[in-house]
Image (cartoon, rainbow, N blue to C red; front, side, top):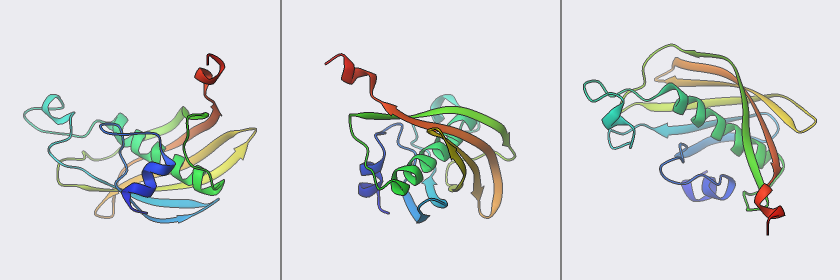
Amino acid sequence: MEIQEIMEHLPHRYPMLLIDRVLSVDPGKEIIAVKNVTINEPFFPGHFPHYPVMPGVLIVEAMAQAAAVLAFKTFNLKSDSRSVYYFVGIDDARFKKPVVPGDRLILKVQILRAIRGIWKFTAQAFVEEVMVSEAQLLCTMRANPDNDRQ
């Protein structure tokens, strides 16, 4: 999937869109996505000026966005204003190596289960085949609360 199709499945936009490409997706099972880490990311001037490191929470967010694309592709849905895809939990998050400008972050996410609208995923991030982060993610899709106000 190229960036235009990714943006059809995710509501995120710059600077929060953290998926650049999807290499493969097997709906209902797994996805492999890419985040190209560049020095002109908006967080690098402050994290850290002397040694730029991608914040771990943004690595986890990138994994969650890959999980969202997998969920949308599984249901053959596209992002719209009627619903919101929420990241509702993180378990067993680990950060094994720093991610720095120039790295190509490979995100591998698999569905563990989906029960009563809560999805559980296992996710890993790699740089050059070395795991840099892993976590289990919980996500859900809900009606947009702003729709009730309109």
